[in-house]
Picture 1 (cartoon, rainbow, N blue to C red):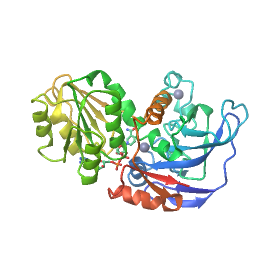
Picture 2 (picture 1 turned 30 degrees about the vertical axis):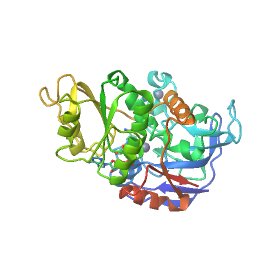
Picture 3 (picture 1 turned 45 degrees about the vertical axis):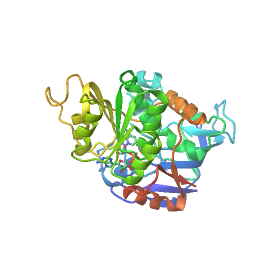
Picture 4 (picture 1 turned 60 degrees about the vertical axis):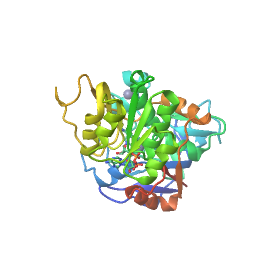
Length: 348
Ligand code: NAD
Ligand code: ZN
Ligand code: ZN
């Protein structure tokens, strides 16, 4: 089968022929229907060096996957061949306290996990291939009726990650509140829809791309701004001087974090989702009183079930730009240069 392999750090991935994996006991082989191209893959290709992550190449890229159950290993029950499924991306040990609570993103026994701190496309072979070997049946979630695999794949990260982040701040997003979404790309355009689906908050969207700002308006953002020196003061003005209750930063650069700190309200949340590598100095008078600064990483199975339910009911929809697997490198090139509308999705 074909697979888009990252063979070493700081290299371009290569489309290669590899053997089709055979599912062992408890495993599921998924015929890939679609795999999203995440900005994190660009960080993987260009920024990491040996020792920075708990795993190393080679592995097949693609951590946002959906497809159809192809074959199941011994002991797997409750799945039918041909059934459309989305794949939960973070693969923990399954038994530590966090995994038992469903938080496999934060597995505390990485030594017992299929890959420490990762999953398919992050240390183990992912879905930019014809088939994806999933190490446990609990990592596949049946799709609700009517949800196509190409629409489901991006939801497993680009919607699940903002969903997890928004849920963490739900108590601050009541009527009269304001949320800021910085970066309306793959994650951000779904983050905006998550806010609309789950809360009554007013939404401010910030992005430097014209097309992303148009999308934010179309998706119902109340105020759409270009990033710049005036952004934070515009947000303060729009909130009667108070600031935003929750700032979701889907970029995470020095510049966006400074904007977040300058526009957040007392008691508010700054949630750093983007991994552009910026820093936010936090000190007593450096951020407004009782502001919480948090990072979030991906989301869990139970949340993915909820995300898929929202999508099945038409409350979340990933805007997608589709590329055949042979053109996966073009998808990443477009992502690098800000040319992707919504999420780039690779179809084998
Ligand atoms: P993307 O390229 O699809 O979207 C990024 C958006 O941010 C683009 O629309 C771009 O125009 C905009 N942008 C860039 N610089 C900006 C600035 N200074 N101000 C305002 N907008 C700006 O990327 P994506 O796939 O949505 O990923 C976003 C980030 O989230 C990446 O850093 C990615 O690695 C990270 N990520 C984190 C997690 C997690 O679990 N924490 C999960 C997935 C992705
Ligand atoms: Zn990702
Ligand atoms: Zn664990």
